[in-house]
Length: 127
Image (cartoon, rainbow, N blue to C red; front, side):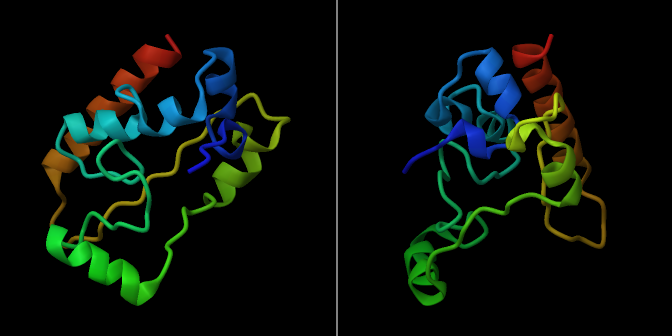
């Protein structure tokens, strides 16, 4: 798969740190890898490189699920990510979009894991 940094909301950071697309998306210091480190499932990540293999479907059923629904593409990002993120060239602001499962009870462990991953990512690439 072609992981092109110019199609990401963190294009500017990747270019300034000379990070290629595969490392940015699947590397040990990718945002997805950092989320996984804290127990937060993530797509993309080293364990789940493409959205065509959804992490919420139990392992043996993933292939069947993918066959039934076909290819699943990445989100392009919401309005803020598209309008103000560095992906499209002129912005000096990077942007990541997170989507989490809806729950009736807040998932404190997931929230803490996301917070820790954000701090680690910032310290690795922006500090």
